[in-house]
Image: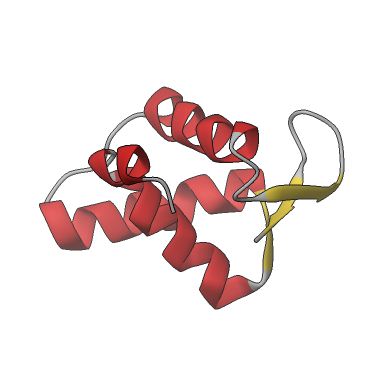
Length: 77
């Protein structure tokens, strides 16, 4: 993985959730990442920040869209 991606604190959490679930809806991915943030950091960030990080991973072709529209994407590694 790109060294630049390791600077984002959400990206390891996003990848961890995707490894656990193989494929997951984007909305559920937000919720799972926010739960992990609560446990790890004591607070969660906003949907916009997580969305930006998911889009970054999609652009870098780390994760892919299996099916669905822009709001109901099903994502996988």
